[in-house]
Length: 216
Image (cartoon, rainbow, N blue to C red):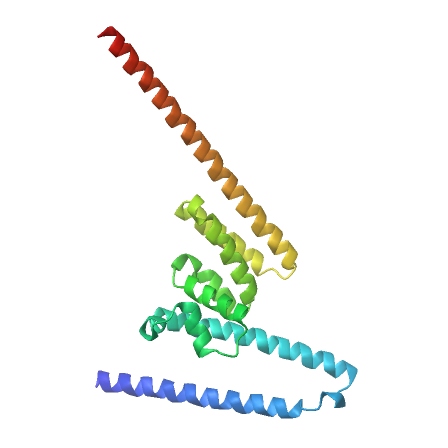
């Protein structure tokens, strides 16, 4: 009974997804027909329509991340013999190359728990895909320099910054650049201190060896 119920539930979900996709396709076609002659729109309407289409595009990209995240999690790209980026390009041939790369980047990062809040923010629409990709590129640079807890803190910080509407693209770029510079600078300082310490040990060891040899 349980197996039968599970099959029926899965089938019902699949039927629901098909119905949603069919309804979405119909809605898009109706919208395209209604906007086939934009010359008939008033100036105010043109702005409103552009704004509405922009929101639809942003929401579509968020949904693409959600579905790609699930697909990568199930290993569909590996089954098809593709990298994550190439798989997204394959199943979404209409996407611009940069957009496909960014969607794949976010979907791939979401497979790690530390990045889940950022991917969730993309899916709920609070962080645009391109801003999330910008954050992830910065995180990739600083990850080798940080411990797990520090990296998680940096991820949370940049996720919050990416979701704040008052921060434009330049602001977010300054924040990520500052964080990268600070983290890499600290790593270099630690590396230099470690090198000096090791050099001192070698020097002291050499002196000790020389004393012993001379004494012997």
